[in-house]
Length: 165
Image (cartoon, rainbow, N blue to C red):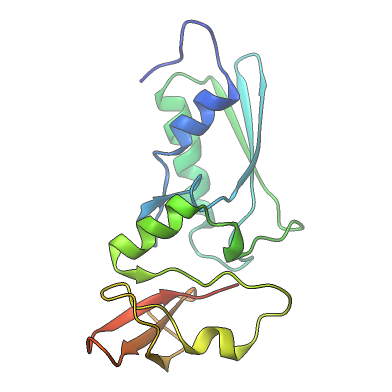
Protein backbone atom coordinates (compact mmCIF):
# COMPACT_ATOMS: atom_id res chain seq x y z
CA UNK A 1 0.00 0.00 0.00
CA UNK A 2 1.37 3.42 -0.88
CA UNK A 3 -0.02 6.93 -1.07
CA UNK A 4 -2.73 7.11 -3.75
CA UNK A 5 -1.90 9.16 -6.84
CA UNK A 6 -4.74 11.50 -5.84
CA UNK A 7 -2.88 12.34 -2.62
CA UNK A 8 -3.57 11.84 1.06
CA UNK A 9 -7.15 11.78 2.28
CA UNK A 10 -8.66 11.23 5.72
CA UNK A 11 -10.33 8.04 4.49
CA UNK A 12 -6.98 6.71 3.27
CA UNK A 13 -5.29 7.52 6.61
CA UNK A 14 -8.06 5.71 8.52
CA UNK A 15 -7.66 2.74 6.16
CA UNK A 16 -3.94 2.62 6.94
CA UNK A 17 -4.60 2.97 10.67
CA UNK A 18 -6.81 -0.16 10.52
CA UNK A 19 -3.45 -1.99 10.39
CA UNK A 20 -2.40 -0.59 13.80
CA UNK A 21 -3.52 -3.02 16.50
CA UNK A 22 -3.90 -2.63 20.24
CA UNK A 23 -0.87 -4.56 21.59
CA UNK A 24 -2.96 -5.99 24.44
CA UNK A 25 -5.73 -7.13 22.06
CA UNK A 26 -3.83 -7.80 18.81
CA UNK A 27 -6.95 -8.43 16.71
CA UNK A 28 -8.48 -5.00 17.43
CA UNK A 29 -7.38 -1.93 15.49
CA UNK A 30 -7.05 1.52 17.00
CA UNK A 31 -9.79 2.58 14.57
CA UNK A 32 -12.30 -0.06 15.74
CA UNK A 33 -11.29 0.65 19.34
CA UNK A 34 -12.22 4.22 18.40
CA UNK A 35 -9.25 5.92 20.04
CA UNK A 36 -8.39 7.90 16.89
CA UNK A 37 -10.36 11.10 17.33
CA UNK A 38 -9.04 13.23 14.51
CA UNK A 39 -6.73 13.19 11.51
CA UNK A 40 -5.39 16.33 9.86
CA UNK A 41 -3.41 16.48 6.64
CA UNK A 42 -1.19 19.41 5.68
CA UNK A 43 0.86 18.65 2.59
CA UNK A 44 3.25 15.80 3.48
CA UNK A 45 2.42 15.97 7.19
CA UNK A 46 -0.26 13.95 8.95
CA UNK A 47 -1.33 14.75 12.49
CA UNK A 48 -3.29 12.15 14.44
CA UNK A 49 -5.16 12.80 17.69
CA UNK A 50 -5.29 9.69 19.84
CA UNK A 51 -7.32 9.41 23.05
CA UNK A 52 -5.98 6.56 25.20
CA UNK A 53 -8.33 4.10 26.83
CA UNK A 54 -7.04 5.32 30.18
CA UNK A 55 -4.19 7.62 31.22
CA UNK A 56 -2.06 4.85 32.71
CA UNK A 57 -2.38 2.48 29.76
CA UNK A 58 1.04 0.88 29.19
CA UNK A 59 0.30 0.47 25.47
CA UNK A 60 0.11 4.22 24.68
CA UNK A 61 3.73 4.55 23.54
CA UNK A 62 3.58 1.29 21.56
CA UNK A 63 0.42 2.39 19.72
CA UNK A 64 1.85 5.85 19.08
CA UNK A 65 5.03 4.35 17.61
CA UNK A 66 2.97 1.90 15.52
CA UNK A 67 0.85 4.73 14.10
CA UNK A 68 3.99 6.63 13.08
CA UNK A 69 5.64 3.53 11.61
CA UNK A 70 2.56 2.41 9.67
CA UNK A 71 2.02 5.84 8.10
CA UNK A 72 5.71 6.28 7.25
CA UNK A 73 5.74 2.79 5.70
CA UNK A 74 3.16 3.95 3.14
CA UNK A 75 5.14 7.07 2.30
CA UNK A 76 3.89 9.78 4.65
CA UNK A 77 6.88 12.10 5.18
CA UNK A 78 6.06 13.46 8.64
CA UNK A 79 3.70 12.00 11.25
CA UNK A 80 2.79 13.72 14.50
CA UNK A 81 0.68 11.86 17.06
CA UNK A 82 -0.96 13.92 19.79
CA UNK A 83 -2.08 11.91 22.81
CA UNK A 84 -5.10 13.73 24.21
CA UNK A 85 -5.43 13.03 27.93
CA UNK A 86 -8.07 15.70 28.55
CA UNK A 87 -10.62 14.00 26.30
CA UNK A 88 -12.39 11.03 27.84
CA UNK A 89 -12.75 7.65 26.19
CA UNK A 90 -15.21 4.97 27.23
CA UNK A 91 -15.81 1.42 26.12
CA UNK A 92 -19.17 2.65 24.77
CA UNK A 93 -17.14 4.09 21.88
CA UNK A 94 -15.88 0.72 20.62
CA UNK A 95 -17.45 0.17 17.20
CA UNK A 96 -19.96 -2.63 16.63
CA UNK A 97 -17.36 -4.34 14.41
CA UNK A 98 -14.85 -3.98 17.24
CA UNK A 99 -17.27 -5.64 19.69
CA UNK A 100 -17.76 -8.56 17.30
CA UNK A 101 -13.99 -8.90 16.85
CA UNK A 102 -13.54 -9.01 20.63
CA UNK A 103 -16.16 -11.75 21.01
CA UNK A 104 -14.74 -13.79 18.10
CA UNK A 105 -11.31 -13.48 19.75
CA UNK A 106 -12.74 -14.97 22.94
CA UNK A 107 -13.04 -11.77 25.00
CA UNK A 108 -16.42 -10.73 26.28
CA UNK A 109 -17.04 -7.21 24.96
CA UNK A 110 -17.81 -4.62 27.61
CA UNK A 111 -21.51 -3.89 27.99
CA UNK A 112 -22.79 -0.54 26.83
CA UNK A 113 -24.13 1.48 29.71
CA UNK A 114 -25.81 4.80 30.39
CA UNK A 115 -25.14 7.10 33.30
CA UNK A 116 -22.87 6.00 36.08
CA UNK A 117 -20.89 2.78 35.84
CA UNK A 118 -21.62 0.50 38.79
CA UNK A 119 -20.18 -2.75 40.12
CA UNK A 120 -23.39 -4.45 38.98
CA UNK A 121 -22.44 -3.63 35.38
CA UNK A 122 -19.19 -5.56 35.82
CA UNK A 123 -20.64 -8.59 37.63
CA UNK A 124 -22.36 -10.36 34.73
CA UNK A 125 -20.57 -10.58 31.42
CA UNK A 126 -21.80 -12.21 28.23
CA UNK A 127 -19.95 -15.47 27.64
CA UNK A 128 -18.07 -15.27 24.31
CA UNK A 129 -18.50 -19.05 23.84
CA UNK A 130 -22.26 -19.56 24.37
CA UNK A 131 -23.58 -15.96 24.73
CA UNK A 132 -25.10 -16.70 28.13
CA UNK A 133 -25.22 -13.97 30.76
CA UNK A 134 -25.52 -16.58 33.51
CA UNK A 135 -21.96 -15.80 34.52
CA UNK A 136 -20.09 -14.85 37.63
CA UNK A 137 -17.18 -12.52 38.23
CA UNK A 138 -14.19 -14.48 39.53
CA UNK A 139 -11.65 -11.69 39.64
CA UNK A 140 -11.97 -8.05 38.63
CA UNK A 141 -8.21 -8.00 37.94
CA UNK A 142 -7.24 -9.98 34.85
CA UNK A 143 -3.91 -10.23 33.03
CA UNK A 144 -4.13 -6.56 32.07
CA UNK A 145 -5.71 -3.59 33.83
CA UNK A 146 -8.56 -3.49 31.32
CA UNK A 147 -9.72 -7.11 31.74
CA UNK A 148 -11.67 -9.10 34.33
CA UNK A 149 -12.06 -12.87 34.70
CA UNK A 150 -15.51 -14.49 34.62
CA UNK A 151 -16.94 -18.01 34.62
CA UNK A 152 -19.97 -19.14 32.62
CA UNK A 153 -22.36 -21.22 34.69
CA UNK A 154 -24.04 -22.61 31.55
CA UNK A 155 -21.14 -23.86 29.41
CA UNK A 156 -18.60 -24.00 32.27
CA UNK A 157 -16.01 -21.89 30.43
CA UNK A 158 -13.78 -19.38 32.19
CA UNK A 159 -13.19 -16.28 30.08
CA UNK A 160 -11.98 -12.71 30.16
CA UNK A 161 -14.08 -9.62 29.70
CA UNK A 162 -12.85 -6.24 28.58
CA UNK A 163 -13.95 -4.11 31.52
CA UNK A 164 -16.44 -1.34 30.87
CA UNK A 165 -14.93 2.09 31.42
